[in-house]
Image (cartoon, one colour):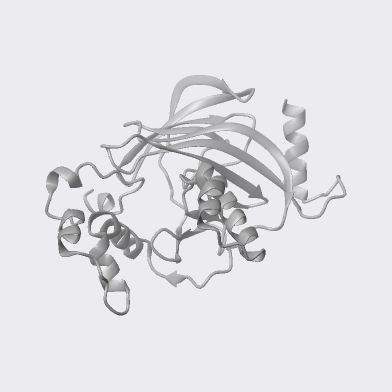
Length: 278
């Protein structure tokens, strides 16, 4: 296993294409993901990829990517059958729409793009997480893994990192350990990234997808995302030109900003407000 990994690492580090295929050699880690947005509802499932090329990585939803490929294919063929689209996209409907690029625009920074409200993009420093190594180990995908914990933006994470894969990266924004994170779960059980596969693939060089993004700061995006979850119609009225024809009673039902019980049931993967409370 170690010899296989060193071979993969050589391909990633050197970018050598020994298979004669087009593209750049990339180490891909596949994670089965569970995520929760509201405590009243069961967790959603996703499959996410962490693609690593040299000092750059890209973390994104395979489900979301498949949905985009299906939509693009139908659009190219001029097929606008709504029922067909729904049927083809149904297996991937829980795909998350964010992308995280570590090492872009430069070393030590990351770029985050999100599409659930609009095409937003922000940049921030790669988090300097304070890890506590635990005296526990296990085996994941034939790799001996060590346990570690950290607290980040209001959430405590328990992770397992591979001792024989010296890449300080992992799913989502988790990183900074002396080995690749193959499994991560928050202490409350609302989020799970469970590594189920490691392979070498040939894909194009990692770069931020070309879109007409709204540039913002991380905190500006978080503020909008909170409003999206707690007052979606109010946000729609603020961001849409022209009138929004939605009954007022429906707007009152979806506006939970003054409802402490419902607010307490919303689950955030990261909470920038938690940094201010320290």
